Image 1 (spheres, rainbow, N blue to C red):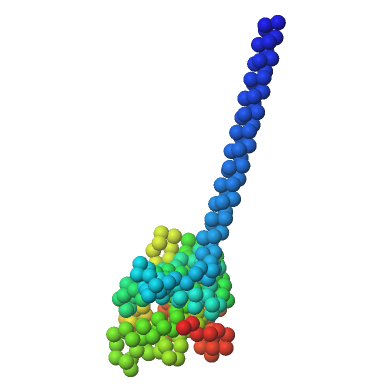
Image 2: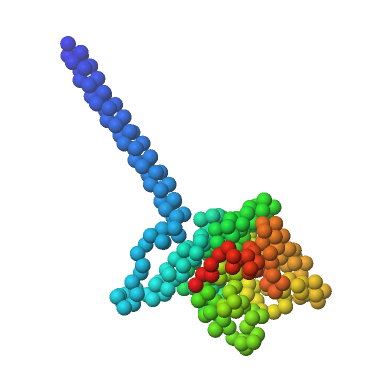
Length: 277
């Protein structure tokens, strides 16, 4: 009789522990599902960060608060101006494209940061899709390469600032920069400056840095530069890889900058887009 009582007590205890462990496992499973769901939502929110920018309230100007840096007010408006003109963050279209906005650094021909906190590159939506196509073309040939973008859409107010800051005589400025009164294709979000970067983060040698002023950067002078020994065949092949990739995707280069590519003509841009002011 005593043994039978012990058996039922043991069975009851064992059943309780079984239920406890089942409940514990169920809770762990639900928590895990909840964790991965939150992680998925978090990643989606990160990807949509540029779109959510429009939903934010405008940042107060310095007359209402003294604690807010002034440049945040300026560049929040810049981004909203680009988005309202149909431009999109290129990394929303293609997150594999590397972005290094040179005008958000001092590593440019002006020698100072002109974009401030703006680190997102915008282009017209169809231009960004075309650039994504170029990235796919490049990676189909060389999976370990990526496009690296130095500049895209550029508001005309920034173009004016660049025009006024360039340290060359006024009558020579148009040799290095589009006159903002006429409008650059960058001001429409229809041009992009870029190069190619490898899997180790090294930019391919194109013979000159980005924004180099001089004939060595001119595609039209490449044959002469090769003949004079100022440009190597490897550097030329790197440029040709970039050019062929962009041309197959529908872009056209210019004769004075190996890094600059247009999505359309200036006339087409005036018909299709508005200048970003």
